[in-house]
Length: 174
Image (cartoon, rainbow, N blue to C red; front, side, top):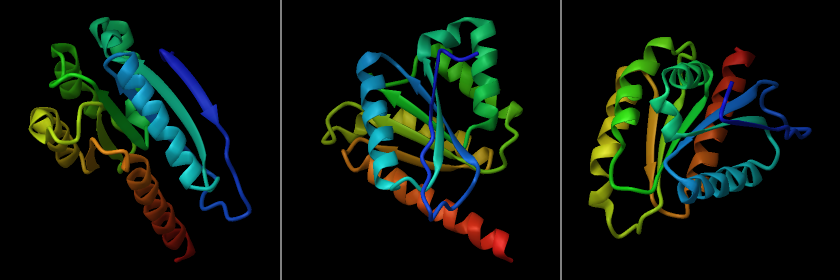
């Protein structure tokens, strides 16, 4: 069960992988969801249909309900990319608590944690606490981390995914 699930099947002749890239997006409010949706759409466009995507969308408030938080943990356990889209200055208590629990269920050995912020890029200090929290989680669990307030977030995500796909292809060729 997810708050909202969308599958975007995108393929091309130069498909790097037959695997679907699972993206979990957790968002604070509708503005943060819109920012994440725009970023994800741009990322898919920039990847030029080299991979299939499956998106799980979770509002932060779902993490207040134990059953929903558990479902969110299960989704995060298999996600390739986990995006936190934040409009405020810090994570709510339920998000901080959830951050402590979900990595224990993680079955995907690698992955990318992303923090998207909807505030002005000239206020980087606002992102310090959430960025440090996510960076610590990523480091403890062998994941990559990226924090972004700029419009270039989609291009950076696309670049990171392209590098991962090329690495997977090279590993399979060996």
